[in-house]
Image (tube, rainbow, N blue to C red; front, side, top):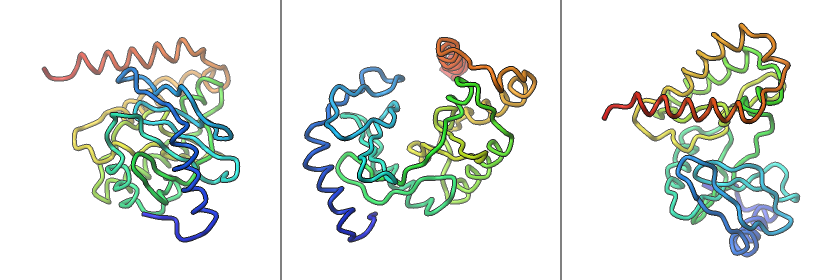
Length: 221
């Protein structure tokens, strides 16, 4: 899976291999918490961190991001396969290249739904519908959307996108997106203050951890 023979892109791959990876230090310190970045060489910038990997960018390549898996965290080849199956779709990124522990992806711009609630940015229903349609598209291509939650979906100019597809080859049922939609309909739409008033981080984190604990209690033993 490659972007092509463009010299500018080839120079990016050289920079990843010779500058970024040797100077980067990341660790997955807790299974259910974001990967920690201990060292990132300049001028690379941290875009975000998930439970498996970090995403960084370079100022010379504003339309691309590099997703680097933390040591010991599997899933790189599976994620590349997901992107191969998805092809081009406006609600998803694209993978242009993958190396030993990283992917080069088209950058998606926007605000996650988690940050929308945290910052008091209204979330229109069209965004929810776009994400529903994108997940149906993925299912039609033999994938099973998994781990779709507020930090993994995004909106820009009133349209929805899916940011993280790394778990779309899993076969077990995942209720995160249906549960988020239920919360949107039952609470978010009925409490107009949530559309404009920022929700503090400690409240957001408490809800996130409470939801995880609730789901864990409901899992079969």
